[in-house]
Image (tube, rainbow, N blue to C red; front, side, top):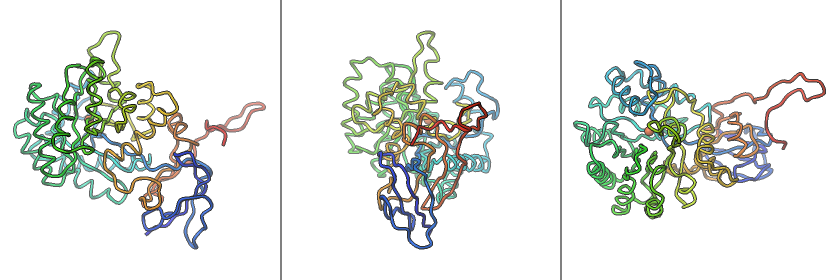
Length: 426
Ligand code: FE2
């Protein structure tokens, strides 16, 4: 197994001048001035920030990099995106999904993103995307943890055979139970889908992650059922509500009851800032709602909140590049998370908090943790967000799996320095 000694790194907790010794896939020692074992290669961090890898808590790998197939989303809306995905699905081949997903995982590794929870659409009875992503999961396992969610895009009760297909996907090895209660035919059907899917997860000992209340309708309150079922079935800490955009528009009085219920159920929350800010508020004139869920209030209540990328170059979103610092920066701005603690919280939302939502084993920089991480051209997590910092090196299991040159601009100005890299002074 690979061994590596990382010299002179800053860590996200504020320590600097730290060495990390990786051996047999784990960090063996972390501290200042570690003795150098013979024959172990060294990586000089030069005082830059070494962080545990980025984690994306919410993605759609079956759709990624399909932008323009079979046509572009002309209105840029969520509903046209869903319709467009419906047009694309019959044309998909397993090989094409695998190729696009593998290409995306290359981007992810280059950006220091080494764990992704991807929803996979289970409404196609062929389960083409499920089989493709299970294959991708096996193939990328040496360098990226891919966790799959059985996602009934067309509604587990609304789509013919929805529940049977979802169960078949779980039988094939999909890890997490998904759902989309706000897309079911009625509020009652939505609540019933939440109950049935949570019962299924409890029966099989699985985690739950539902697309929940991804709408501007303040009366879309399925997150309440999700919190209730989580408690009723003893699933605390294993259930996540993704999007929860309706919370943005809910009455404050109702939210003052809802957030403590969510905290009691230890519900995880994933906001998807890039997608929420582009897809929500589309029926508004002005003022136009931002649509992202109430991230500052949820964080303040002690709830685990992560940010997801959700989409990259697919029917819903034509941009993106697997850059979780771009996601964190957007979340910070949309949520006005500008205190020092909140800005730090935005970095955690794409690292430690996201890892907690996935239930990743051995995540972190403590001795005994998996020797995974990313060396960023920044002095601190906040600076990393400010700069969307360059990923100087990406480490997986104690092996360097990606490198990028440092980012700087050469200058030719009278009496001025000959280069800038936009970082603060050490
Ligand atoms: Fe999503």
